[in-house]
Length: 216
Length: 254
Image (cartoon, rainbow over all chains, first blue to last red; front, side, top):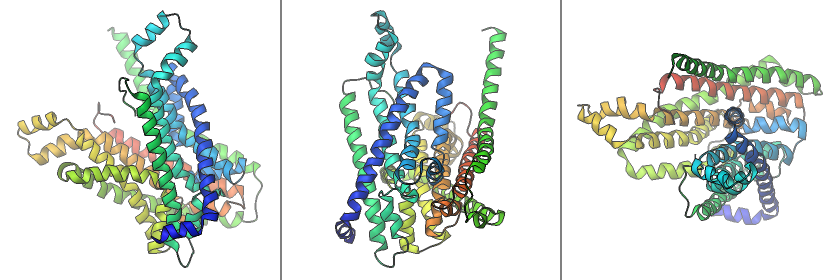
């Protein structure tokens, strides 16, 4: 296919764009995981906090990406920063929601037993609840990653040099339009699918021998 | 349970639902008010008067409404019946629907739009076709999942009561699946309004025009465009959630 020749011929520009894409996704997911875990634990502990956090994070994913990135660029400037912050905001919902669900799904009898052994609240969380919630939390991380890999493409509209660039550059070309678009879409889809499969494998490996918990 | 406890419970549920009802419009109102304040702090740009006038903003707003609602209308009218047909009749297509729906998540919306540009050129039509293709997947997936998720025993008893296959479908299966179907419709509505913001790159018009004309030039223009799209997305999702509350039978949730 001519797309692959196009990708090979334009590797000098596409290579760095793939790198930037991966960089943006990695940073935003790390950011969202750090914040989302904390919010999720809080949301599992207090029902009013949970309601507020879920309402806010689900409102965030409703915001159109071009609007959110544009808005953020007013304060953090153009380029990668608004994209990283915006993507982290989108990734919060699946991570927070699943952390909360994972902790709340831990059998109360286990929590009771841990308390009976004399564990403090902190020990209970780090040694019992979070480890048991790992498969559900990973499911959230997986959803967040697939979402963020695709939306990162829109970052090109606010100046990020990621895989949205070949797609935008295709507009207005007289020849090779299709090749240029596909040179953006194919790597993005490949990254998304690979990330999904990797995290799915990790999820399976870590949930082996555990009672299945419904992940939403 | 005492009478007082029952009443207290009833009132609490009522107040919570009123809060839910008005939280979104109230938040949008506060957001718009706050952005007026932010607007004043941003430096005006030379391009402002050409974009920030009622004629331009209105035309792009109406254009955005048209792009979004025409696409959403087509998706709803085609997607739900098609999903029902696939769920009850075409087994092999079910796997294909779920596969495509999962794959669709990995493909960026702007990529679909530019693909259609490569095929059909600039304009509103390629934008609408792109939005329909992109928006169809969540509706199809949720409709198929909803109908397939209905307990066969329930259908069996409906048939046992003397309902025809069609009656069972219309008065038992579709109502039971409606919560999931609505979840798909809401996902699609938000997706379509958001992706329509990228329609400007292929000449589709819409509010993306406003944001794009401010990027690199004027923060004030970006702010106005972004706040308009964001408010539209939030209010449209909220409005559809009201329809959902009215239509989906009580006790059924996704």
